[in-house]
Amino acid sequence: MSGPPARPPVAFERATPGRADARAALRTLRDLLRHAVSRFEAAGLCYGHGTDNARDEAAWLLLWSLHLPLDTLDDWLDCRLTAPEIDAALALIERRCAERIPAAWLTGEAWLRGVRFLSDPRALVPRSLIAEALDEALDEWLGEGLPDWLSGEDRPADWPQRVLDLCTGGGSLAILAALHFPDAEVTGSDISADALALAADNLALHGMEERIRLVRGDLFAGLGDDERFDLILCNPPYVNAGSMAVLPPEFRAEPELALAGGADGMDFVRRLVDEAPARLTGHGVLVVEIGHEADHFEAAFPDLEFAWLPVAAGDRMIAAITRRALAERAARRA
Image (cartoon, rainbow, N blue to C red; front, side, top):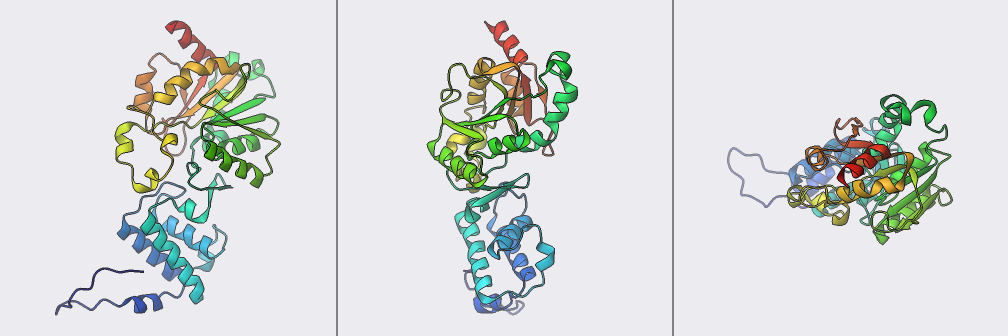
Protein backbone atom coordinates (compact mmCIF):
# COMPACT_ATOMS: atom_id res chain seq x y z
CA MET A 1 0.00 0.00 0.00
CA SER A 2 1.47 3.37 -0.96
CA GLY A 3 1.14 6.17 1.53
CA PRO A 4 1.39 9.96 1.25
CA PRO A 5 4.65 11.57 0.14
CA ALA A 6 7.26 11.72 2.89
CA ARG A 7 7.49 15.05 4.70
CA PRO A 8 10.28 16.34 6.92
CA PRO A 9 9.30 15.94 10.59
CA VAL A 10 8.58 19.10 12.53
CA ALA A 11 9.01 19.70 16.22
CA PHE A 12 5.34 19.41 17.17
CA GLU A 13 4.55 16.43 14.94
CA ARG A 14 4.96 12.75 15.70
CA ALA A 15 6.74 10.86 12.95
CA THR A 16 4.39 8.82 10.74
CA PRO A 17 4.97 5.03 11.00
CA GLY A 18 6.45 3.48 7.91
CA ARG A 19 4.63 1.05 5.63
CA ALA A 20 6.13 -1.98 7.31
CA ASP A 21 5.09 -0.73 10.75
CA ALA A 22 1.52 -0.08 9.51
CA ARG A 23 1.33 -3.53 7.95
CA ALA A 24 2.60 -5.14 11.16
CA ALA A 25 -0.13 -3.41 13.17
CA LEU A 26 -2.86 -5.21 11.22
CA ARG A 27 -3.53 -8.47 13.02
CA THR A 28 -7.27 -9.02 13.33
CA LEU A 29 -10.30 -8.60 11.12
CA ARG A 30 -11.26 -5.63 13.28
CA ASP A 31 -7.89 -4.03 12.45
CA LEU A 32 -8.42 -4.61 8.74
CA LEU A 33 -11.97 -3.28 8.87
CA ARG A 34 -10.82 -0.03 10.45
CA HIS A 35 -8.00 0.25 7.95
CA ALA A 36 -10.32 -0.38 4.99
CA VAL A 37 -12.86 2.21 6.12
CA SER A 38 -10.09 4.78 6.51
CA ARG A 39 -8.71 4.01 3.06
CA PHE A 40 -12.15 4.16 1.44
CA GLU A 41 -12.99 7.48 3.06
CA ALA A 42 -9.61 8.96 2.11
CA ALA A 43 -10.06 7.78 -1.48
CA GLY A 44 -13.51 9.38 -1.72
CA LEU A 45 -15.20 6.22 -2.96
CA CYS A 46 -18.84 6.21 -4.03
CA TYR A 47 -21.26 3.46 -3.03
CA GLY A 48 -24.63 2.21 -4.24
CA HIS A 49 -23.90 -1.20 -5.76
CA GLY A 50 -25.06 -3.29 -2.82
CA THR A 51 -23.90 -1.08 0.04
CA ASP A 52 -24.34 2.59 0.83
CA ASN A 53 -21.42 3.32 3.16
CA ALA A 54 -17.72 2.62 3.67
CA ARG A 55 -18.10 0.27 6.63
CA ASP A 56 -20.59 -2.06 4.97
CA GLU A 57 -18.55 -2.13 1.76
CA ALA A 58 -15.36 -2.88 3.68
CA ALA A 59 -17.06 -5.66 5.64
CA TRP A 60 -18.42 -7.21 2.42
CA LEU A 61 -15.04 -7.22 0.68
CA LEU A 62 -13.12 -8.48 3.71
CA LEU A 63 -15.53 -11.32 4.47
CA TRP A 64 -15.50 -12.32 0.81
CA SER A 65 -11.70 -12.24 0.75
CA LEU A 66 -11.59 -14.50 3.82
CA HIS A 67 -14.21 -16.91 2.43
CA LEU A 68 -16.51 -16.20 5.38
CA PRO A 69 -20.32 -15.93 5.31
CA LEU A 70 -21.32 -12.35 4.54
CA ASP A 71 -23.71 -12.07 7.48
CA THR A 72 -21.27 -13.16 10.21
CA LEU A 73 -18.94 -10.17 10.67
CA ASP A 74 -19.31 -9.90 14.45
CA ASP A 75 -18.36 -13.55 14.90
CA TRP A 76 -14.90 -13.00 13.44
CA LEU A 77 -13.89 -9.44 14.29
CA ASP A 78 -11.28 -10.36 16.88
CA CYS A 79 -9.85 -13.39 15.09
CA ARG A 80 -6.17 -13.08 14.20
CA LEU A 81 -5.43 -13.48 10.52
CA THR A 82 -2.55 -15.15 8.74
CA ALA A 83 -0.05 -13.10 6.76
CA PRO A 84 -1.37 -14.37 3.39
CA GLU A 85 -4.94 -13.52 4.45
CA ILE A 86 -3.92 -9.99 5.39
CA ASP A 87 -2.00 -9.52 2.16
CA ALA A 88 -4.92 -10.72 0.04
CA ALA A 89 -7.33 -8.43 1.90
CA LEU A 90 -5.03 -5.43 1.55
CA ALA A 91 -4.67 -6.06 -2.17
CA LEU A 92 -8.45 -6.10 -2.56
CA ILE A 93 -8.82 -2.89 -0.56
CA GLU A 94 -6.24 -1.17 -2.72
CA ARG A 95 -7.87 -2.37 -5.94
CA ARG A 96 -11.16 -0.87 -4.84
CA CYS A 97 -9.46 2.47 -4.17
CA ALA A 98 -7.34 2.49 -7.32
CA GLU A 99 -9.74 1.14 -9.93
CA ARG A 100 -12.97 2.82 -8.72
CA ILE A 101 -15.16 0.04 -10.10
CA PRO A 102 -18.13 -1.52 -8.28
CA ALA A 103 -17.13 -3.87 -5.48
CA ALA A 104 -19.36 -6.53 -7.05
CA TRP A 105 -16.97 -6.73 -9.99
CA LEU A 106 -14.04 -7.37 -7.67
CA THR A 107 -15.87 -10.29 -6.08
CA GLY A 108 -17.71 -11.39 -9.23
CA GLU A 109 -21.02 -11.55 -7.39
CA ALA A 110 -23.84 -9.37 -6.10
CA TRP A 111 -26.72 -10.08 -3.73
CA LEU A 112 -30.27 -8.83 -4.25
CA ARG A 113 -33.09 -9.74 -1.86
CA GLY A 114 -30.90 -12.47 -0.42
CA VAL A 115 -30.26 -14.08 -3.82
CA ARG A 116 -26.75 -14.36 -5.28
CA PHE A 117 -26.05 -13.27 -8.85
CA LEU A 118 -22.90 -13.28 -10.95
CA SER A 119 -21.84 -9.72 -11.74
CA ASP A 120 -19.28 -8.25 -14.13
CA PRO A 121 -18.92 -5.31 -16.56
CA ARG A 122 -21.29 -6.85 -19.10
CA ALA A 123 -24.34 -5.45 -17.26
CA LEU A 124 -25.43 -3.19 -14.43
CA VAL A 125 -24.77 -4.49 -10.94
CA PRO A 126 -28.09 -6.01 -9.74
CA ARG A 127 -29.85 -3.44 -7.55
CA SER A 128 -33.25 -2.70 -9.09
CA LEU A 129 -35.85 -1.42 -6.64
CA ILE A 130 -38.41 -3.53 -8.50
CA ALA A 131 -37.00 -6.54 -6.65
CA GLU A 132 -38.32 -5.11 -3.39
CA ALA A 133 -41.60 -4.11 -4.98
CA LEU A 134 -42.12 -7.67 -6.20
CA ASP A 135 -41.93 -8.95 -2.64
CA GLU A 136 -44.01 -6.25 -1.00
CA ALA A 137 -45.64 -3.25 -2.67
CA LEU A 138 -46.84 -4.93 -5.87
CA ASP A 139 -48.82 -7.65 -4.14
CA GLU A 140 -50.44 -5.11 -1.84
CA TRP A 141 -51.35 -2.83 -4.72
CA LEU A 142 -52.77 -5.69 -6.76
CA GLY A 143 -54.87 -6.81 -3.81
CA GLU A 144 -56.14 -3.46 -2.59
CA GLY A 145 -55.25 -0.58 -4.85
CA LEU A 146 -56.73 -1.57 -8.19
CA PRO A 147 -60.22 -0.89 -9.51
CA ASP A 148 -62.65 -3.78 -9.56
CA TRP A 149 -62.03 -4.61 -13.21
CA LEU A 150 -58.44 -5.59 -12.45
CA SER A 151 -58.68 -6.95 -8.94
CA GLY A 152 -60.62 -9.50 -6.99
CA GLU A 153 -62.64 -12.10 -8.86
CA ASP A 154 -62.30 -10.36 -12.21
CA ARG A 155 -58.59 -11.05 -12.37
CA PRO A 156 -57.63 -14.65 -13.18
CA ALA A 157 -56.61 -16.62 -10.12
CA ASP A 158 -53.41 -17.76 -11.81
CA TRP A 159 -52.38 -14.20 -12.76
CA PRO A 160 -49.73 -13.58 -13.97
CA GLN A 161 -49.33 -16.42 -16.41
CA ARG A 162 -46.69 -14.66 -18.53
CA VAL A 163 -44.06 -12.19 -17.25
CA LEU A 164 -41.60 -10.11 -19.27
CA ASP A 165 -38.48 -8.59 -17.75
CA LEU A 166 -37.60 -5.87 -20.25
CA CYS A 167 -34.01 -4.54 -20.15
CA THR A 168 -33.14 -7.66 -18.19
CA GLY A 169 -29.39 -7.01 -18.12
CA GLY A 170 -27.80 -9.81 -16.13
CA GLY A 171 -31.20 -11.43 -15.56
CA SER A 172 -31.66 -10.75 -11.86
CA LEU A 173 -35.24 -9.47 -12.08
CA ALA A 174 -36.26 -12.30 -14.41
CA ILE A 175 -34.93 -14.83 -11.90
CA LEU A 176 -36.59 -13.11 -8.95
CA ALA A 177 -39.87 -12.97 -10.89
CA ALA A 178 -39.62 -16.69 -11.63
CA LEU A 179 -39.06 -17.37 -7.93
CA HIS A 180 -41.94 -15.10 -6.92
CA PHE A 181 -44.36 -16.47 -9.54
CA PRO A 182 -43.39 -20.17 -9.73
CA ASP A 183 -46.14 -21.06 -12.22
CA ALA A 184 -45.54 -18.21 -14.65
CA GLU A 185 -43.68 -18.29 -17.94
CA VAL A 186 -40.89 -15.71 -17.73
CA THR A 187 -39.03 -14.00 -20.57
CA GLY A 188 -36.01 -11.74 -20.25
CA SER A 189 -35.22 -9.33 -23.08
CA ASP A 190 -32.31 -6.97 -23.70
CA ILE A 191 -30.62 -5.21 -26.60
CA SER A 192 -27.13 -6.13 -25.37
CA ALA A 193 -25.66 -9.48 -26.38
CA ASP A 194 -23.06 -9.15 -23.60
CA ALA A 195 -25.73 -8.60 -20.96
CA LEU A 196 -27.71 -11.59 -22.21
CA ALA A 197 -24.58 -13.76 -22.01
CA LEU A 198 -24.26 -12.81 -18.35
CA ALA A 199 -27.99 -13.46 -17.88
CA ALA A 200 -27.50 -16.96 -19.33
CA ASP A 201 -24.73 -17.55 -16.79
CA ASN A 202 -27.07 -16.51 -14.00
CA LEU A 203 -29.85 -18.75 -15.27
CA ALA A 204 -27.42 -21.65 -15.20
CA LEU A 205 -26.33 -20.69 -11.67
CA HIS A 206 -29.93 -20.97 -10.48
CA GLY A 207 -30.99 -23.88 -12.68
CA MET A 208 -33.49 -21.64 -14.49
CA GLU A 209 -32.61 -22.46 -18.09
CA GLU A 210 -35.96 -24.23 -18.62
CA ARG A 211 -38.00 -21.64 -16.71
CA ILE A 212 -36.78 -18.44 -18.32
CA ARG A 213 -36.42 -17.62 -22.02
CA LEU A 214 -33.92 -14.98 -23.11
CA VAL A 215 -34.41 -12.91 -26.27
CA ARG A 216 -32.45 -10.08 -27.84
CA GLY A 217 -33.95 -6.93 -29.28
CA ASP A 218 -34.57 -3.23 -28.85
CA LEU A 219 -37.67 -2.72 -26.69
CA PHE A 220 -40.14 -5.40 -27.93
CA ALA A 221 -38.32 -6.20 -31.19
CA GLY A 222 -37.03 -9.58 -30.02
CA LEU A 223 -40.54 -10.92 -29.35
CA GLY A 224 -43.09 -12.54 -31.61
CA ASP A 225 -45.68 -10.20 -33.11
CA ASP A 226 -48.53 -11.75 -31.15
CA GLU A 227 -46.82 -12.14 -27.76
CA ARG A 228 -48.68 -10.59 -24.83
CA PHE A 229 -47.82 -10.51 -21.13
CA ASP A 230 -49.78 -10.16 -17.91
CA LEU A 231 -46.90 -8.36 -16.20
CA ILE A 232 -44.04 -6.38 -17.71
CA LEU A 233 -41.19 -5.36 -15.42
CA CYS A 234 -38.73 -2.78 -16.70
CA ASN A 235 -35.69 -1.11 -15.19
CA PRO A 236 -34.87 1.04 -18.24
CA PRO A 237 -32.10 3.54 -18.92
CA TYR A 238 -33.54 6.61 -17.18
CA VAL A 239 -30.65 8.81 -15.98
CA ASN A 240 -30.99 12.33 -17.38
CA ALA A 241 -28.13 13.94 -19.28
CA GLY A 242 -27.19 16.34 -16.49
CA SER A 243 -26.89 13.53 -13.98
CA MET A 244 -24.97 11.35 -16.45
CA ALA A 245 -22.37 14.11 -16.80
CA VAL A 246 -21.55 14.06 -13.09
CA LEU A 247 -21.79 10.35 -12.30
CA PRO A 248 -18.94 9.11 -10.06
CA PRO A 249 -16.42 6.66 -11.54
CA GLU A 250 -18.12 3.58 -10.05
CA PHE A 251 -21.27 4.31 -12.06
CA ARG A 252 -19.50 5.54 -15.19
CA ALA A 253 -17.82 2.13 -15.31
CA GLU A 254 -21.20 0.48 -15.98
CA PRO A 255 -22.63 0.17 -19.51
CA GLU A 256 -23.81 3.62 -20.59
CA LEU A 257 -26.49 1.99 -22.75
CA ALA A 258 -28.19 0.73 -19.59
CA LEU A 259 -28.10 4.10 -17.82
CA ALA A 260 -28.42 7.06 -20.18
CA GLY A 261 -32.01 8.13 -20.85
CA GLY A 262 -31.53 11.31 -22.86
CA ALA A 263 -32.01 14.94 -21.89
CA ASP A 264 -34.72 14.28 -19.29
CA GLY A 265 -34.10 10.55 -18.83
CA MET A 266 -37.37 9.62 -20.50
CA ASP A 267 -36.32 8.71 -24.07
CA PHE A 268 -36.73 4.95 -23.65
CA VAL A 269 -39.67 5.32 -21.25
CA ARG A 270 -41.64 7.32 -23.83
CA ARG A 271 -41.27 4.52 -26.35
CA LEU A 272 -42.17 1.97 -23.69
CA VAL A 273 -45.37 3.76 -22.67
CA ASP A 274 -46.41 4.16 -26.31
CA GLU A 275 -45.80 0.52 -27.27
CA ALA A 276 -46.70 -1.33 -24.07
CA PRO A 277 -50.50 -1.45 -24.60
CA ALA A 278 -50.04 -3.76 -27.58
CA ARG A 279 -47.89 -6.09 -25.49
CA LEU A 280 -50.11 -6.42 -22.43
CA THR A 281 -53.11 -8.68 -21.89
CA GLY A 282 -56.41 -7.17 -20.82
CA HIS A 283 -55.43 -7.55 -17.16
CA GLY A 284 -51.86 -6.53 -17.86
CA VAL A 285 -49.72 -4.26 -15.69
CA LEU A 286 -46.50 -2.41 -16.52
CA VAL A 287 -44.09 -1.80 -13.63
CA VAL A 288 -41.30 0.61 -14.51
CA GLU A 289 -38.49 1.95 -12.35
CA ILE A 290 -37.65 5.63 -12.82
CA GLY A 291 -35.43 6.18 -9.76
CA HIS A 292 -34.93 9.85 -8.95
CA GLU A 293 -36.59 11.01 -12.17
CA ALA A 294 -40.13 11.27 -10.77
CA ASP A 295 -40.51 14.94 -11.72
CA HIS A 296 -39.37 14.24 -15.27
CA PHE A 297 -41.70 11.22 -15.49
CA GLU A 298 -44.72 13.19 -14.37
CA ALA A 299 -43.85 16.05 -16.73
CA ALA A 300 -43.49 13.64 -19.65
CA PHE A 301 -46.81 11.87 -19.00
CA PRO A 302 -49.28 14.39 -17.54
CA ASP A 303 -52.21 12.52 -19.09
CA LEU A 304 -51.29 9.04 -17.80
CA GLU A 305 -53.03 7.45 -14.82
CA PHE A 306 -50.61 5.42 -12.71
CA ALA A 307 -49.73 4.52 -9.13
CA TRP A 308 -46.46 4.85 -7.24
CA LEU A 309 -45.28 1.63 -5.58
CA PRO A 310 -43.45 2.66 -2.40
CA VAL A 311 -40.12 1.07 -1.54
CA ALA A 312 -37.66 1.72 1.26
CA ALA A 313 -35.63 4.12 -0.90
CA GLY A 314 -38.64 6.35 -1.59
CA ASP A 315 -42.30 6.62 -2.52
CA ARG A 316 -41.87 7.98 -6.07
CA MET A 317 -39.38 5.66 -7.73
CA ILE A 318 -41.48 2.87 -9.25
CA ALA A 319 -44.61 3.44 -11.34
CA ALA A 320 -47.30 0.80 -11.87
CA ILE A 321 -49.58 1.31 -14.87
CA THR A 322 -52.48 -0.83 -16.02
CA ARG A 323 -53.02 -1.72 -19.66
CA ARG A 324 -56.35 0.08 -19.54
CA ALA A 325 -54.68 3.33 -18.44
CA LEU A 326 -52.08 2.97 -21.18
CA ALA A 327 -54.74 2.25 -23.82
CA GLU A 328 -56.93 5.16 -22.70
CA ARG A 329 -53.98 7.52 -23.00
CA ALA A 330 -53.21 6.18 -26.48
CA ALA A 331 -56.86 6.68 -27.51
CA ARG A 332 -56.87 10.28 -26.30
CA ARG A 333 -53.74 11.01 -28.27
CA ALA A 334 -54.91 9.31 -31.47
